[in-house]
Image 1 (cartoon, rainbow, N blue to C red):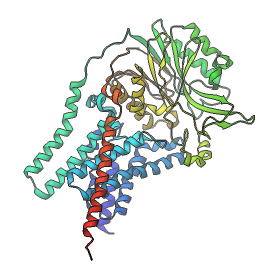
Image 2 (image 1 turned 90 degrees about the horizontal axis):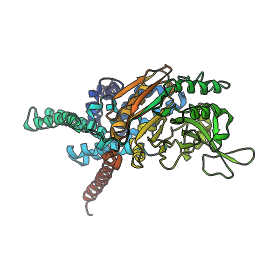
Image 3 (image 1 turned 30 degrees about the vertical axis):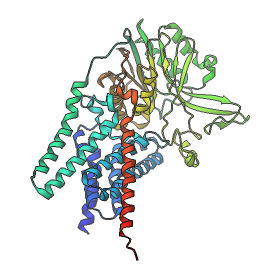
Image 4 (image 1 turned 90 degrees about the vertical axis):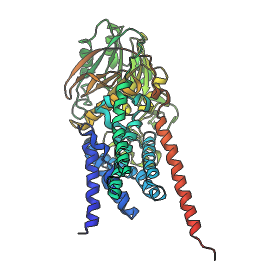
Length: 530
């Protein structure tokens, strides 16, 4: 065996294992501050870009599979496709770093890696193949007291923290190898320690009192606990499920309850959204709201709308020549009407496919997806309770991992975040645990309460500092009631969104262009006149 080639493989395996071992819900978060060192070492010691690409792909594929293997529980082909594709896309910033690092000194090349990776994360948050589950800044969800400054930077600040730490400690090791315990080595080591400690110290200074918008009211969140594989979508059980949701809710309601929250697709019928009042299956729901006129109900439902013409590429033609669009919706009901929001950040594969992958629609339809994909809202719809107690950001399913997207609702006056989800597709895995923890970061970014209603768990209340106040465990039916405040505060992040990612993208583009220019000048200077 070629020992040199073998050592590269072992370093790649070590890199993937470190990234996995430090990811939520592991308590070993500190490992992420050094987890990229194996890949930085491989970039430093590998001559061939093809070999570096292979080794980096091994690192990133191992990280993806070990951390998000549970995706395959919902769809094995979909999960495998996600692992392979996501790992491949993640290689792009590392290849850009590999090609540019020889054009710059170590400081500039390290900054280029940070800029390239953060540019990738920003793009991965904003296109149809979006899957930002492994955004580095999500890693601090277990430690809200470390990252109270997310109200200024969002999760991008956490990504910068991890990347800067790795670049600094790698340069510390290089400097030690080259110079021993020199002055330069100690300066770099001190800079690394400061990078680790200063954000935590600042986090403790940032937590300031918030300004109350009005009197506090209580909110009820419901966890019905229906297995999506065996129970929830079984024909003939719809009326029983709706009645049980109502019964669970009424156990906690009182005169001060202004909002009840049910999970994603809690209404067990596919409904025409412009005929909710005439739908006889929803009669018990309307009766429930009339008995409790002070309370509104936020619930998930699978909606449909009919059209005479094809209004979008998601519309499907019916036998009578009309067209129908499907939606994964959140609806805020009072006793007379409903406001509706259509989920906008759709899951690649089951819920949406880019036009160039539309031929794969039949494959995903066999595994719980929709043939044409769900249509989506093109604007952020804040849902306001009839008593004007809350203006709600409705985050359906994994929309709660999109900090910048949710901040747009806050800019429109939202003062409460409600996450409605059905994480039961993944079973008792790390998936639903990670999903719940990520919601804590949205609370910090916006300084708003987060109410989470999850079909099989974890349902909870999260305060504006990211602390979990109450929660229902996995696989248990129940309800929670909590007094919740609406705050008028607007954070720097909710005002400006992902400004840090945009700044990094600008720097990354500039460095890439500079590297190309330097390469061009180098080639020109090497051409000798005849």
